[in-house]
Amino acid sequence: MHPRSRSGNVMTFESAEAALAYVKETTFSESGFTVPIADKFTFAGQPDTIGAGMAVVLDAILAKGFWPDGFEQKQGYRLYRYKKAE
Image 1 (tube, rainbow, N blue to C red):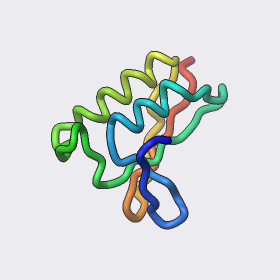
Image 2: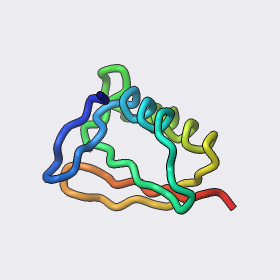
Image 3: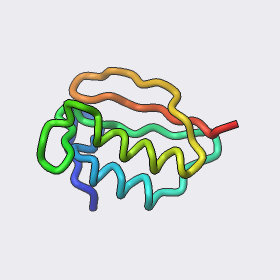
Image 4: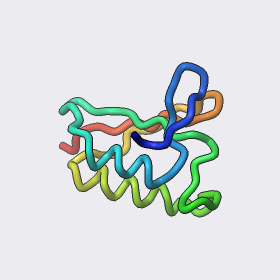
């Protein structure tokens, strides 16, 4: 099970390691998918102030043939959207 927290009714990822494992293990639909990332998202236990954690996760998403499609700021997390590369 991937370390996640609950933000309202949504389970969010709290670390790059957890989000990366999810991305690598999951087969996504051709239309796209979302990844809920907790505001307290960390990389190796430290605040991800420079975005290194998301860069690692994004690299795995790009390798699967998906591109960023924006995000929505929610209370306690961001919902990142990805779509199939054309």
